Amino acid sequence: MHITIEEDKCCGAGQCVLVAPEVFDQRDEDGVVVTLDTRPPQELQEAVREATAVCPAAAIEVHA
Image (spheres, rainbow, N blue to C red):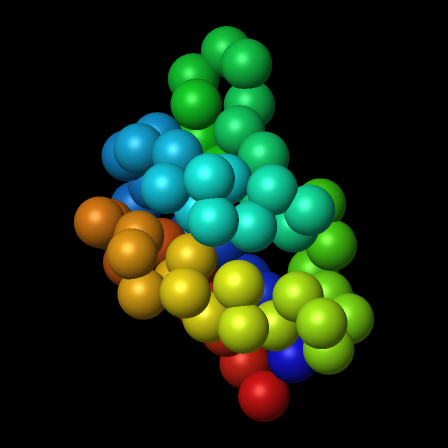
């Protein structure tokens, strides 16, 4: 799994951080998502998929 973020789409809702805090965080200055681990281990991949699904801006993309 590889994660990419489209920062221009991110609205700073923070849902991804709530679902997968080991993988996502937000910039202090504007709340835009940052990825802490672009290739998360197997045990976090379900949380990443859920974070992707709940992102209101569809800013997170998961690649196989």
